[in-house]
Length: 206
Image (tube, rainbow, N blue to C red; front, side, top):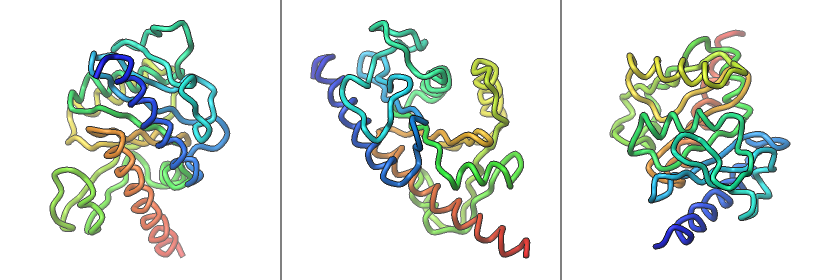
């Protein structure tokens, strides 16, 4: 597959993911951004300001591994959060960042992290083979200084067990995987698990 065909396939997958994610109500207005790593090390990423449920090929652009535009268009302001994940996790081939309601609510109620344990659906995540497991999803304060935020996220992974997701408080969630399909699977599983925890939180608060 040549570079152009590789880009077209990555763009097609991001477009399909965008339509599915939008059908769930996870990318209201023009929120969110998605990317996929290309075979040559560059990254296909959504152009800034595009509605993710109505993406077209022209709404996907190419940046280099440092986030610099290769076609003079403007990627998301949060591009550095994508490129930093690809650099830290060489196996990552896709990053999805929507703004789901459940993740946003979790970020307002659960402090610095949410602990998911004893759920059968945890087996949706690579390396987990039993419900008798724990997955800790960190929650970071929102910051309009993306470079600083990327540094905070990176410092966290220096001292904590890896998890293929994190939440930005009052903002949204980042998930990544070895493919767009895997990242989408993680996103769907997390949304369900967050919904469970929110209901339990409501019960315990009564």
